[in-house]
Every structure is written in C-alpha cells, then in structure tokens.
Image (cartoon, rainbow, N blue to C red):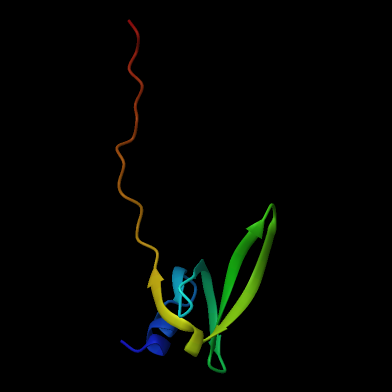
Length: 79
C-alpha cells in the first residue's frame, strides 16, 4: 500500500514512524496535508508538540499493536 494511503487510513491512531535517516518517532497521526503528515508527539512533563514530516522523509508508518490480553489478578483470601 502506498505510504500516502496508509497515512490516511491511520489518522487518529497511535503510530510508529520510520524515517529515511534511520530514526523513528511515535505519536498520534493527526492529519495529512500538502504532502506532509502531522503527528502529535510527547515531549516531557505535560508538554506535547505537533510536528510534521514530508512523505519523502518517511520510510514507513505502522499502527501500534493491541495490548496482549492479561489475566486479571484476583487476590485469594489468606484463611
């Protein structure tokens, strides 16, 4: 699937983005406009930033996988 189609399909979802320079970023894919994707990324403490990356900077966009189903812990009585 072309990267542009993939981006449109993942708007509003948490994604990992592999960049052409070998680095990666993660965040929520907010929009696709003018040949760029816009991603809200966590910076630190209570700060987030919306950053944009052009399609020629992006190698791939992957959705975050679902969390594995964990059994719920139910404490047992001690008696």
